[in-house]
Length: 183
Length: 281
Image (tube, rainbow over all chains, first blue to last red; front, side, top):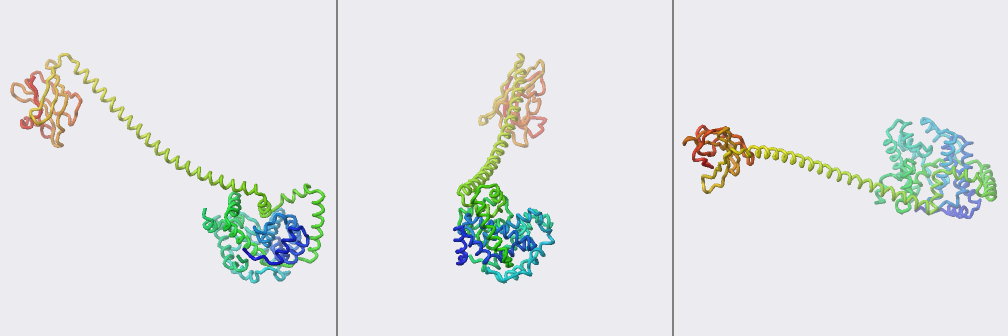
């Protein structure tokens, strides 16, 4: 189990105590990661801001259901944010065409990039080493909520290949990132 | 259930990607509660994906922070006034899968239900397997029974035929003018007997094989009528026939009947040293 940083413990305590200061701390410490994810998934700054606001509101509302023994705070927040994005994308029916994925995922918002508060510097370089075709499957599933069969249809691949590629990408991430996430 | 094998199957990766059916999703959640190793592996997989997902941090605008915090105050006020307002419910319904999962994890009932569902699924799978095995077994028994019925049917046909033959024999033997001639073994050490039923007026001769040693494969019994000291062939006996009455060539006069063992197809003259039975009229 990973060690919790003092700031993480402080945020959890404040969330449990229904102290709004928790959201302020989240914004200051994890806002960059969450907003980066929103930008990546939504494509536009306006949409990203709207979704970030909704995600933080949900984090606040459902703070009592967060179980620190079950998930890392960071992962829990990322998942809420990601799912809020997917809901919004579905609501707008604006899931990207397959050929748009790369540009929307990797180029949008790059100009407002700032330093990262979490410990995974150099990740982008690592990520770039992932095989393009494996990565694409992982992105479509994880960022856009496409089902296995939707991906198979869109990329004209057998369903089994979709799963194989995604697993390959995950295994690649595992070997490259294991040291960053701690276990 | 081997948690290590379960983890190695890669299903946890499929789970975090959303590549699982509803049933598999419940299974993963349930097993993660039962096995700490699976829970830990699942956490690691989720952490990994989260780390990867937010690899590109971008500072959000400062003014957004105040807007969100201000909005939180309103939310709090609103939910304090009418805790179960339709608005509240609507938000709950909109919750993404992941949050639902965290929320449901809090209620023991939900995971008891999930555990029950997994157990039920496992039980049904087992039940299905056993029913397949039972089906195979039943199929084997049915085939055996069918073979038995077939055998009984052919047995019955055989009996029907025997019955008809017996009836024919009985009809033949009920002729009042029929003479019965018993043929007995001519060699003391040999147990052999046969019967001739003979109607000289109608020139009809029937042979009944009571007890004759089985013929060698290259030999056949031949029936002779002895007329004034001379043997006259009145036919070859059917090979290995035991009970049936056999119609032989007719003859109107005979002093005795005898049977010799001859080469297949019979001989013109009897091989006397191969005489088996003899009976005087």
